[in-house]
Length: 282
Image 1 (spheres, rainbow, N blue to C red):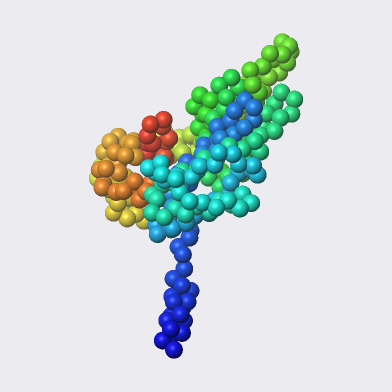
Image 2: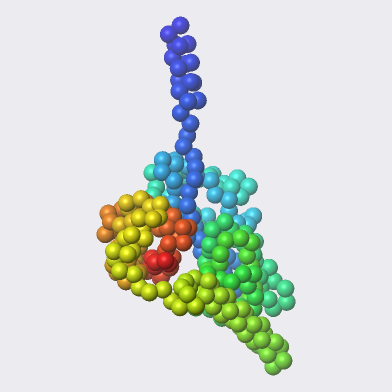
């Protein structure tokens, strides 16, 4: 009788205490494209608090050299089933996933096209000797051969170093000129939309007291206010690491805070090669 009661108790406990499985934030997503059409996909994921496992839908159908590790480079256990990657993140603060796939690119004549459907912004690193001929949307950032695209169904079309006739080259350069023109016009439009003030004049610079009063009218917690004040005192721009250390927040907590502020339109997170920067937007 006692054994039967113990078994019932253990089964009930397992039902009432489910495994914590859940959400995560995409810290970065980088797609490195190679000349043969293969793409290296690299995720950096931040598991939600108390999540012991996370599930990620991978791009493509074929996956080569799949690696899953934590922030210290230690491998994590995982299970792959029909493109769904179940990662046992345990106590990892950061989860890194990388693999190679040939399924994201296609070729039509001399033009290659990368197609991706992503719920988060992503960066495409193209071969050094390529020429971009078409983009599905205005990019968030262009730096050398790296293009950061917004979320959604996106495509990037490009050609490798091209040696055709003069007429074909002229047509190709015309496409590039059109793209650059669209990007410049889009950038000007965004800039004009962000300008405030009468008659299109730029806003006058606020004093610290005025800025503090402005923060009081926003729904912000103490950490967010301290972070914004610190950035204001630094001239409107500071590195994420600098702000994090100044207000004493862990890396993942600070990252989520910056994302919240960015969604509210209060800051812009600018990705750099060595560190990210935060810039005031109001």
